[in-house]
Image (cartoon, rainbow, N blue to C red):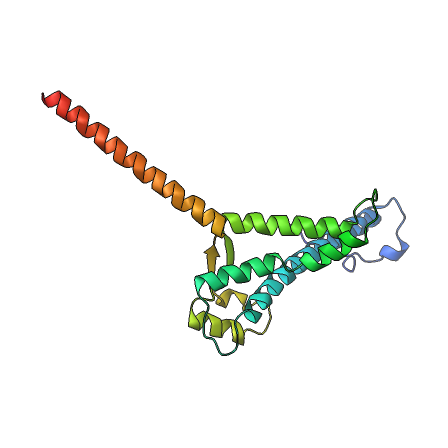
Length: 191
């Protein structure tokens, strides 16, 4: 495996001719370091969003309460999705007609839409219905490394739960109809 090149590992790069091999090595090393730093900052930003999500759900459990019901957890998720509504309303109110929406407004609306779609298809959140998990979340020190100790649960929105129940009911009716048809065919064959 080739040695990973860094700017410091290329000796005498300060005095290198612009079109020399050393100059090209330094360019490659600088591009590699830039790419690595961009990846690292993107990953850190993604981790910070996840940490903020856990902090929000930790704040949703009152101190005297050991756990939440599924209904309370669903309400907490809806609060989480609607957390930027006030800022969206403020930005929208300050807009003048015919002006382009600021990037912040577009970003907040897209984030809300993405989270709502995720909630409709099942959103992973800390499982606040288990006392032990709530205690673990309260003891958590807001660091990324210990976030894996907190158990997650997939929660669906009320609308998608209703749709699933209706779909189960329809499937059950279809299955019953199939069985009835099959029984009728068997009876006709016996006669």
